[in-house]
Image (tube, rainbow, N blue to C red; front, top):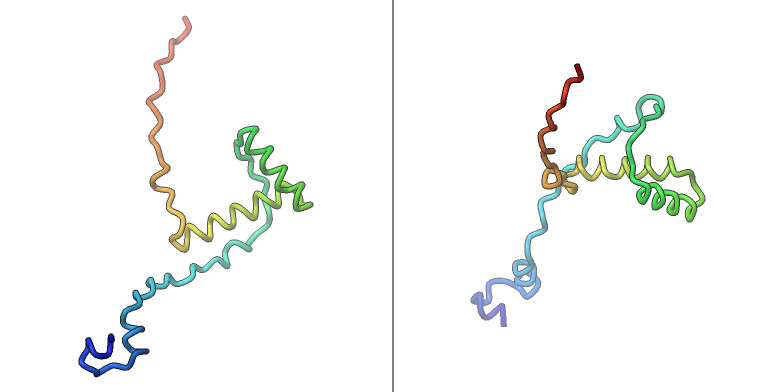
Length: 105
């Protein structure tokens, strides 16, 4: 049927290839070799109690330290961001201006 539609020029396989959507352009992999450089340095981040509990539950289930879970998730997020699959721009908000302070006499 498709062959007849195209005047018999193409084979059925060629028609099928033409009717399939083109694959999405491939983003070249980001160079993540810098993620393994240097020593591990402790960095404090503020987490809510619920976030800590969720991380602890995941760590307990997998039998690893909570720190290992956080490092793995952060590394995953960095790789996804660099590859263009994680867009954080829509989550950025401007905080309200600070309130005026009263200076004590």
